[in-house]
Length: 252
Image (cartoon, rainbow, N blue to C red; front, side, top):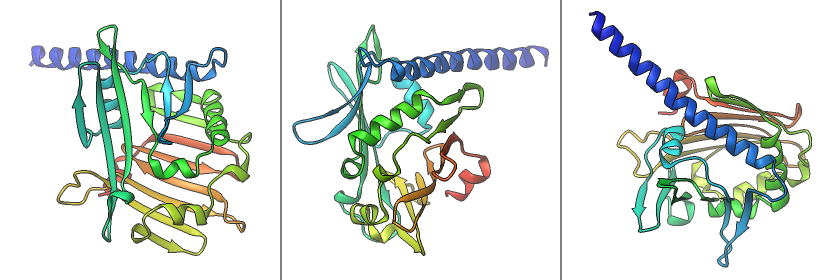
């Protein structure tokens, strides 16, 4: 019994040490956001119009990202120079087409013998509403954020974000699948599952959004992968944290 308890203790210590390394790399990535000259994390647009967040000095490894997301990708492609992961989610309810898929593409070239995140391509639908100005202001908010590694939680100050740059209710209605929406007054609700959707239709994300009288985004509660993101433009605060077990159960 003693040897079994010792083994469990050693496994716990090893797990904490491994997670500590991940936390260090998370903090390194955050520090890169704050470095302006030369910029280490930038937003680029390809000739096809695709918009990506590019990490000039990659720190997060492929294993880090999969562990942080808490889900295997929809597809994986290995090439001689990099690993490409794709997370594709489709709306629950109604008939979804390829246009309705929200696709996050991640590229991990090999750096010093380890595959590390270099590029994250933003889902095409959001390119229409995420201006460079809004992305820049959001990255600055992340730079100023308070991160609590032990609980995988972060808090953000959004008081410097221009509310007029936020997406409107009309814009979201125009680009996202309407059959996945539950509407009520000035609010919208979306549900998506990660491809290939399990037989029980487990949800990947659940979005609830509220809008002001002008139709601008006012508040949001978004469950995405294993995280819950809340935003309140009245207080100028946002928070991201691991979903509680009860919240994850509701997403099924």
